[in-house]
Amino acid sequence: MNDDTLDILHRDAADPLAGFRDEFLFPRGPDGREVAYFTGNSLGLQPRAARSLVEQELQRWAGLGVEGHFRGEVPWMDYHAALREPLAELAGALPHEVVVMNTLTVNLHLMMVSFYRPTAERPAILIEKHAFPSDRHAVESQVRFHGFDPATALIELEGDGPGGTLTMDGIARALDAHGHRIALVLLPGVQYLTGQRLDLGAIAPLAHRKGCVVGYDLAHAIGNVPVDLHASHADFAVWCSYKYLNGGPGAIAGCFVHERHARTPRPRFAGWWGHEAATRFRMGPDFVPAPGADGWQLSNPPILAMAPLRAALAQFQRAGLARLREKSIAMTAFLAAQVRARVDRVLEIRTPDDPTQRGCQLSLRVRGHRDEGRSLHEWLEREGIVVDWREPDVIRAAPVPLYNRLADCARLVDAVEAWSKTR
Ligand SMILES: *Cc1c(COP(=O)(O)O)cnc(C)c1O
Image 1 (tube, rainbow, N blue to C red):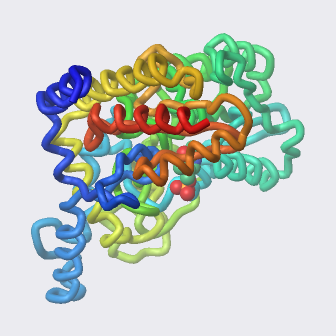
Image 2: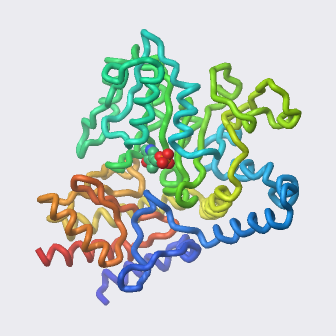
Image 3: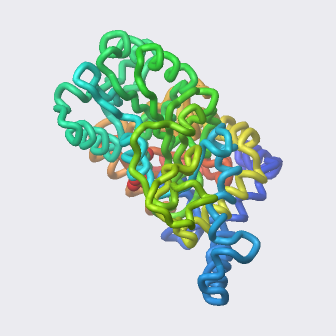
C-alpha cells in the first residue's frame, strides 16, 4: 500500500459522516465485492431503514384496515405532513410551501396549469436547449395544449459557456431579447448533463423584472446542493425523490409553491385531497383549496410509496445538509484532481470547476472516438464501478456524500488508468 492510498484511507476514516455508509445497501459487482456506486444522481441507494418502515405500514394495514388512517404514531391521514418539515429544510422553503405528491413530470404539468397562462402577446416558455427530455415534452405539450406553436413559443437557451454550460450573461441576454414574450421561465437547479449548478437566487428576480413566471426543476439539485427556494422567490419548483433523496425507484415526488401564491385565484386542476383539510370530509360539492402547496394535491397519497422516503429524509435530518455539502465539495474536488492528475489523456471534465457552480456530479467527456467511451464504460462495469453513460460521449459520476468515500473515487480513477493502459 503506498502513501497516497494510506492517506485516502485515513481521510475516509476521519470523516464524521462515514457511519452513514453502513446505513445503505450496496449492489455487488461481477467479482462479488460491493460496487463503487456513482449513480446516486440517477437512483439513490436503498437506506436499510426503508424496508422496516414499509413493513410497518403493511403491518398496520393488516392489523388495522381502514382504522390505519386515524391510528398509530403517524396515521395515514397525516403521513404526508410528516415528510413536510425535513423536505422544507432541504428545499429552503417554509413548511406550507412544500408538498409530497405524484411524480416529477405530473407535478410539472400541474404547476403549469396554474403558472403557465399564455396570452397572444406573451405566449412563450424559456427552457434550456438540452433540457431533460421529459421537461421538454411537458412544456411543448403545454404550449400546444394552449393552441400555440412550439416553433415560436418555445425559446431554447443555448449553452454559451465552457462545456455547453449556461452563463448568467446568456440568460440575461435571452430575457432582454424575449422577456416581453415569455410567460414562463423553466430552468434546472443543477443541469443533468453538465452538472452545472445555476444561481437560482439571481435568475428569478431577473426574470420577474421582465414579467415572467419562474419555475425550477430541482431533480438534480434537491439533496445535492443547498437550495433556498423561498428566498429565491421562484413561483414554483418540482423535483423527484429517487435521485439524491434516495426515496426508491419511481418514488413520490415533491413540489414547491411560493407562499405568495398560497391563496392564489389562479386556475388549477383540483382533487379532493387538495381541499381544505378541516372541511374535506363534509364531502360537499364545492372545492375550497387548502392554503399553500397542499392545495394542489389530487388524491389521497400512496402510503407505501412514502414510507421509504420517510426513512431517507430522516437520514438527511441527522446528517445535516450543511455537513453533507462540505463533504461533497471536498470529495468532488478530490475526484476532479485525480482525474486531471492521472487520466487527463482519457477524460475531459465538462462540469464547472468552481464548487459554487456544481453539485457532486462530474460529467466526464471521453476523448477520442465514441467507441472508446463505450469500451471504457463497459470496462468500468466489469470492474464493479457503476457510472452512467450519456450519448454521445459523456460518463457521469456522482460521488454522494451520504454513502461514497474517497476510496471509491480512487477506485474509479485506478480503473480508468488501467483501461487506458490496454489501449
Ligand atoms: C430525472 C428527471 C426527470 C424524470 O421525470 P419523472 O417524472 O420523475 O420520470 C425529469 N426532469 C429532470 C430534469 C430530471 O432530472
